[in-house]
Image 1 (cartoon, one colour):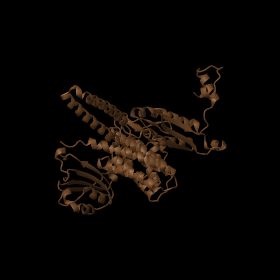
Image 2 (cartoon, rainbow, N blue to C red; image 1 turned 180 degrees about the vertical axis):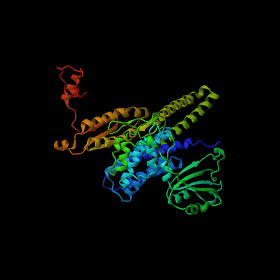
Image 3 (cartoon, helix red, strand yellow; image 1 turned 60 degrees about the vertical axis):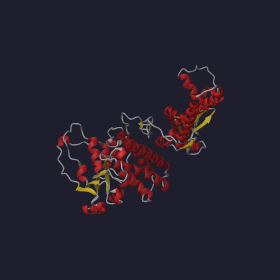
Image 4 (cartoon, rainbow, N blue to C red; image 1 turned 90 degrees about the vertical axis):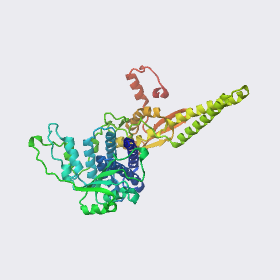
Length: 507
């Protein structure tokens, strides 16, 4: 029986979604025109980790998509291209697309091919000024996304025809690691020859009790896209000659099959415009749909559409600080000690041990209360789990409304119960949207009113009297008492003769 790889998949997806969090946060912190190497490095590392993990697990679509993002970020990091708002917007949209791809793979749902091809095209336009017509992944995605339903025959796959490279089957012997060789080093050298993807074979992994950490039980199938020669590949693997089975085959080019005129693929206008126009792509045209059986909490994009939440399967698991686990273990240890003491007292109980029994029961009661509190603390999550969703929301909506808004988060470490976290997201979205849409004025109106051009929304959380208080404060136009009263009369909440003071009207 082999190891269940699903546990490794779960860790991979968790790390990917955390990487996407870091990438999105970094992109929102980037100032256009400035090259902040530290921030760009953080974003780049997130993309690089996702690309590497995806290649290892055989998720080539994710690896190929992330590779283009990585290239764009690398050029920004090296100063070869400026940090512009269009580029940041494309990368933010690509993060959403990547999140949707990973969520679909995790849920065994099909990937939204149209969204992938549009964002991939937008990235290539930022990189090259136009879409490469011979791009294998673009051709493949367009074919799958816009093919008419009546086309049932197998048609020419441009992906395979455009590829030039090698397929490498690498099966190390068990003693490979004992000779000092490391497959990872070979893969790094292989990456210098060109872009590659790898799928790992785990069927030879023994049961957990039989695993020898010095034995190599894995094998790989690699696809290298490069114009290198077979001699260059053999030179890399010469280090492990005699310690593995190696099969190198050239990727076969297939000749195109003609497609009958009546069955020609009809490209959608958005795809045609991507290929022909060098202008930046309006990625807002594409709505990344949430997989039907995903458990993610929806969030709202700048156009009011629901997009998938950046976290995967939020209700199934939580991360717990190790300090909380240690505290619980210590309390359990105290309970066990007290239990043992009470057991000894009970074996040969006499009335002169009554005081000792009472002390033991008192200790047990105290430890039980402490254990209950410790378990409840494990369910507590920092409010930042919710707050961290709003910088992107404010960024997107303020851009759509042509408003300049600065979001300030206060009290992010305030802890609330996990159940509360899941309940307050939607109300907070509604309140933030009210501030964005109706509270903060347009820049020219703010300047005319003697206010700073940039509006401020403050999202604050703090403890007060055993409760958690969440406040949303903005420096916008505020509430109009007369409009509120008119609306209340219109809805029949009050009669026309009612006289309300400010507090009554606002409540």
